[in-house]
Image (tube, rainbow, N blue to C red; front, side):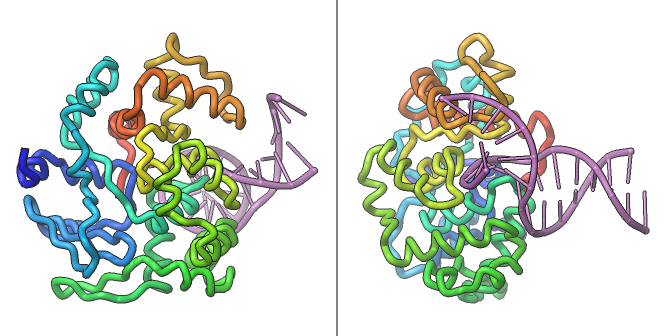
Length: 283
DNA sequence: ACCTGACCTCGTCT
DNA sequence: AAGACGAGGTCAG
C-alpha cells in the first residue's frame, strides 16, 4: 500500500478526537495542529509540515497497520471497536510537548488540558502565521525552564505548574533524554519518567505510548478501568478503583499478556469507543 | 504494604 | 446566586 493510500484510510477527525492530542483546530476542511516547533496541516489526502525538519512520520505510516489490526482483532471487544472506528490511528508526537501535556492532564479533563496548553503556547511559544491565521508553537523547554512558577500558574495549571517547570529544566539540561529513552526498553524508560515529579504510572504510559515508541504501554485511567470492569470482569481482576503501584503494574502485565505487543493501540480503540458511547466531548 | 485525602482550577449541578 | 462536586492522577503521611 502506498503512503497516499494509507493516508486515505485514516480518519483524522476520530484520531484527533481520541484524547491523544490537544492542540488541534479545524478551520473549514483543514486541521491545523501544533507538534513541538512544527505546525502540521492536514487537508484531506495531503500533509504539509511547515518546518525545516525532516519528516518524522507523525501519522505512523510505517506501522504495519494490517498486521496490527490482525493482532488486535483476536479480542472480541477490540474487534468491535475497530469496526466502529476503522480509521482511528495513534500519532507519533513530539516527546517534550507530550510530556508536558500529560503532566498537565492529571486530575483534569480534556477541555481544561486544552485550555492550559493553549495558554502556555500563547505566553511562551513562538508566533507563526499560517494561511493568514495566528498560531503559537509549543514552548521550548528552555522557555518554561526559565519561567517563574507563578507565570506558569497564570496559564491555569494550578499545582501542576511546579512540575512543569521542574520537568522542563530536566529536559533542557538533557537529564531527561528522549532519544535515549526511545532506545531503552519499556520498563527502563518508564522507570526514568516516573522519577520526574508529577509523573506516575498513567502519565508515564501516555508519554511512552504517544511519543516514545512503546506500543505496549497501556495507560490505565478511570475510563480504561471502567472498560475493563464492564467487558472483561472474567478476564482481569480489578481490585480497587484507585490503583496502587503494585496493582497498577500487575494489571498492566495482565493486560499486555492478553492484548499483545500492540496493547497501546487496543487501548486507543477501547478508549475512543467507550467515551463515544458515553457521549463525552472532545476538543 | 495499603489506603486516604489534599491538591489548582473550572464547568456543571443544585 | 453561591457552594459543592468531580474531572483521563500523584504524592505524602
